[in-house]
Amino acid sequence: MKNQELARIFRHVALYLEMDNDIILKKRSFLKFSKSKGFRNLGETEFLRRSRRSEASPKIFRIRAYENAANSLESLPDDIENIYKKGGIKALEDVQGVGRGIAEKIEEYLKTGKIKHYEEMKKRVPVDIDSLSAVEGLGPKKILILYKKLKIKNLKDLENSAQAGKIRKLAGFGAKTEENIYSQRHWLRKDEQ
Image 1: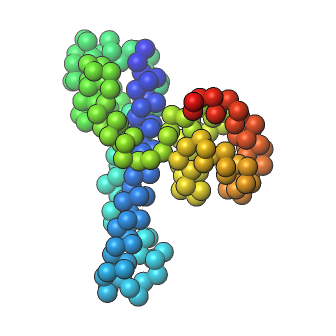
Image 2: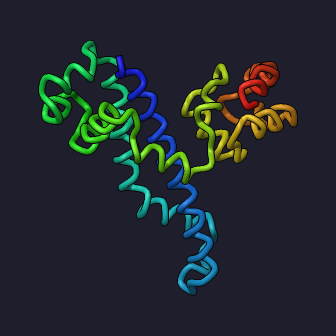
């Protein structure tokens, strides 16, 4: 069944969108903060808060759409490929949590084995989600926290942060999680080679 693979891809797209949004906002905030007189008197934190409120909202809906589609695909008793064969895009849209845009991406995947948008996101956002999610105990939410707080983009960054004792300081992680990550470093290095 392709349901699980598509759910994984959609979860990754949601994560990439969230990371990409942070990258875009940081670039924009620096430019606006340094060039615009109207924002010079605002603290950077206040400016970022205002920026996120106005610019992040549309992305939040896209992120939720991908997460909802992933949840639906994971719990779907029927194979998505069979649903598509029986009724095309319209049948895909009838699946709870799948709208027109996601249905088109499912169709693209079923026809080509890839989703162009996902491939573009992987190039644009410099985080190796596939490798990081192979680490036991790291799911999308924890990868996002590691990226946002410690700028971890790959297994080497993860190993260095674990070795330096930085991961245990993050909320929701602790010493045991850090030790678990660090204990996996040998086989993780094999995967990178």
